[in-house]
Amino acid sequence: MKGKHVAVVGATGAVGREMLAVLQKRRFPVREVTLLASARSAGKRLRFGEESLPVRELTLESFGGIDIALFSAGGARSREFAPAAVEAGAVVIDNSSAFRMDPGVPLVVPEINPEAVRQHQGIIANPNCSTIAMVVPLYPLHRAFGVKRVVASTYQAASGAGAAAMAELVEETRAQLEERPFQREIFAQQYAFNLFPHDSPLDDDGYCEEELKMVRETHKIFGDASLAIHATCIRVPVLRAHSEALNIEFSRDVSPEEAYRVLSEAPGVEIHEARDENRWATPIDASGRDPVLVGRIRRDRSQPNTLDLWVVADQLLKGAALNAVQIAELL
Image (tube, rainbow, N blue to C red):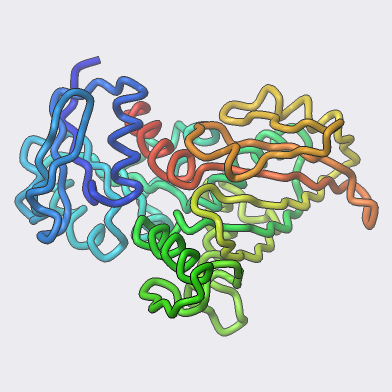
């Protein structure tokens, strides 16, 4: 494979840094790497292998000669700068929500719908982190048994709100332990030793944006809008890696053993549990690891044809940077 000139937009953020690490770890065929970020980050240097690369200011003229541009700088910057990257000849893989539901932009999880990459017109969207964590194990179960309905409860880490949110959780926790005042900048409510429903905007029915993303994005990725999905998203005081409890209703009776068999062979999934010790995957187990960890599969005794499944995934990796690089590999 011929080496590519890759740009990382938002290179100094938590996901941008992970993108660099994943490119190196997976030995993506890179000819040159350009790091782009806001003016305040310009001049910083980041490591890529043995090199120390400068961060340049992101402008509309930044994309000359770029083959692939990995964007993780927020929706506003994606909407402003992605068209310029495409016009300059780059393929944009965007980690924001800016283009996910655009009918002309493929929304891709490589383990599920890799063929959708061929439909791109310059931009490919990376799904939301909580969506990815759910669909990687859900899709093989859906294909094998037919899923009718999913009720998802998420327990989302600070990493979902970026590096500044992770730092704020650490500092607020320290302040709480030292019994001193702390001025929050990222979250409106106390995050240390606390939890609260996801702070994304609410619609008129009381659903937050994060919950609606899980519904709409899953329909688009699966190519099936008939699947019933209900989500409740919660922020928990964990630094990295999201957890989800999935209640899955099938079109027929499915035993836990059948589900374990399918998931043990599913790409991107790892069964992670020690049932005899009552130990299951935790965010610490998933942090820094590529697979979506699953386990604690059990029957829902309250209704037929329904199983419960516990899922944990690194939000910065499979939930963001890893999925984006896997899309680049498909290209």
